[in-house]
Length: 494
Image: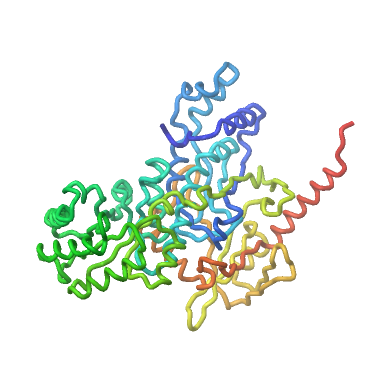
């Protein structure tokens, strides 16, 4: 079944009203954004844009019979006919996959006839909320260490689609590879794996069986990376010893060009890794790597590193694959303009008050003689407003904090460079950008991350990066709110 129609019924019941009342051709602008990053993150990582474009392109591929299953009756006949041939004809603006995005900034902007834009909401959010949850968690885990992290979470993911595309999101946001073979095939990235405890026990539940398992594995995987799982029975008393024995008997030593190692999957990983490192080094296996798994996340990894663990690489499963501590990402999809008129949803909760109008976000950079180009601030403007024009002309400008107008920062002409975060990716219903492969997306993320300060990248109590909106956008929002409040206060039913 086409995921374009993995939707909520109310998208289509609203569409029926728009169709009947003549609003179907009104040009709507919807923004997808989030209000608060999970786990007190400073920011989130974008992933899923390509899948959203694929979903959008597949609209209009169902017959009227499909729509009759959930929109039955003669009164829906004309609407069903319209939906069966309704292709997306609008424009889409989006951030790149791998971009670092802050709250309230438009990740995706859809500009299209109202029904076309409205029915995208649920499948678009389904894609983006999943992938951005996983990407943002993977970023946190990978920032906890300078060592490689592998994504190992397919068996815990919420279904095959989530496993496959979650692994893709994890690689973009820092993971070195994934255990998922479908992700590897689809996106051209490496998939990796070692062995399970069942492989070891299949050779007999004994110390000699463990040795036979290791030796057989080495013999059947020569000229490949080799990792032996050493904690099936006892890591230090037999596992590490059998691993060295099997390696030595099969001619594997520090000259083995494909890389070799052992894997720890239980117990005190800090202690065991330190002891294993001593044993390996004393026996001439100085290049034998120690790989660790076992319910790891960024906090455990940080603590292992603090304890001086001798771990060369980590495998992380459900913490990444399900974004375990915050499995539900908070992207929303809101109408911000209709037929040129800005609109918003009012809320007494300031965090839920949305920015109206057709927007664009600029990232402001300054060059530091010692540190190179550093990101200093983001500002979201109405497209073509007075601040947007100043920024694009390279003029001096000042930005103010939305909630404290006495906090401001001035950027002098010639002292900064800038780039826009949103780019047009679909024009008149067709893709209009060249695709980026997973490695380009990963490099874009890594390069973006390097331009933020270490204090903004830290996991605990990060320094908050400056994110503002233009005065014109602020004034537009407050004007709409003030008018609404006045109307509400004067409203009565006679």
